Length: 256
Image 1 (cartoon, helix red, strand yellow):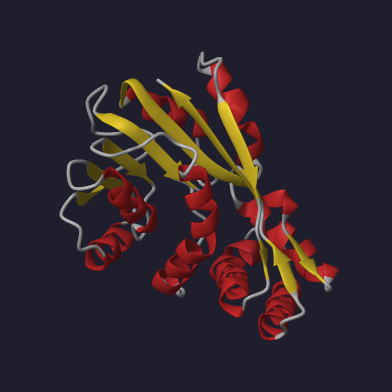
Image 2 (spheres, one colour):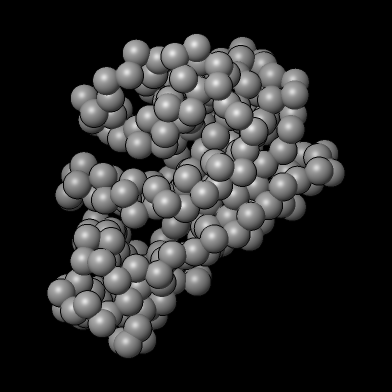
């Protein structure tokens, strides 16, 4: 896993805000999927378990969900935030899952392929552990589409720092990736969010703060540029006329 965000900096708070900010988009996409009652589901790259709990509600007591993440700290937070008896969490690497072929009816990943070293390897693992006639769903973004208004400098800075992610535009590639895996019938939806509410905008600031050292160390941005970006976002958080357009989010899925 190639992860450029230092989760020791506001990690749990940032993850919770990430979950809250992207929940509406996630719900809209999941509403497109068939009834999930009673299925066995896998949530890959589950973080603090927000999407895992969403899936848990949809599968009901007769179903189950396993959340997998490579970060033990995030998994501990997920466990502490989860009361549902039909949900479990386990440590794992998305590139090499410790599950037998065809273990799950539904395999889901949100904002995971953005971070991984080999997204096609991860997608093939998702397909491998899904049962015949099951559903594999990938939900990821095109981070080149971020913008801020009225301050264009904030958006430019966000676009620049997010190039640290290994696969910044992975959302635009999902349809073709499934096709390369041999699937002709690929469903695709696109969504985006325009955020004015302070906490939603604060997510961008917290993310930049957690990435700033890598940005400076790699030479992508100077310390002055990072500080200026943080300052612009800090001001924007408090200004209700300041908008952040979060990235276009793509959901692609296939029947196995």
